[in-house]
Length: 124
Image 1 (spheres, rainbow, N blue to C red):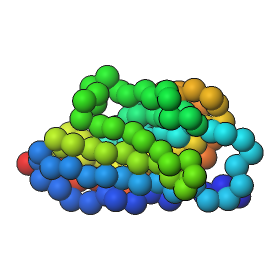
Image 2 (image 1 turned 90 degrees about the horizontal axis):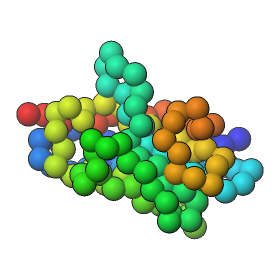
Image 3 (image 1 turned 120 degrees about the vertical axis):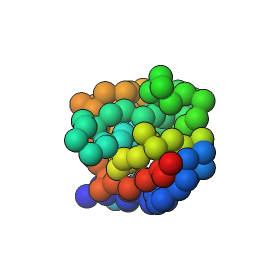
């Protein structure tokens, strides 16, 4: 059974940085893309960033480009999300997910396995 566990969330002041990590355990059936999504209270889950297996292809939500960076270490089954210049509106639960596709896909439907999420709170 494949499981994902996120870590690295917490409370940070506006303008600060956080780095989220996601570890994948269990046997995956093939190479996979990894994505980060977030969900704020009362809002739908939204795409943040994605990276394909080789890390040569990345995608970002347009509004987050330049502040967030996704990376992965395939040898460690890890993905990361570096978040800089954080704003109060970045406050949300952040989820990582894997999707069995070769592309850094942006839509939720492509993702097959999800983590439990990690809370990020940005104070003003």
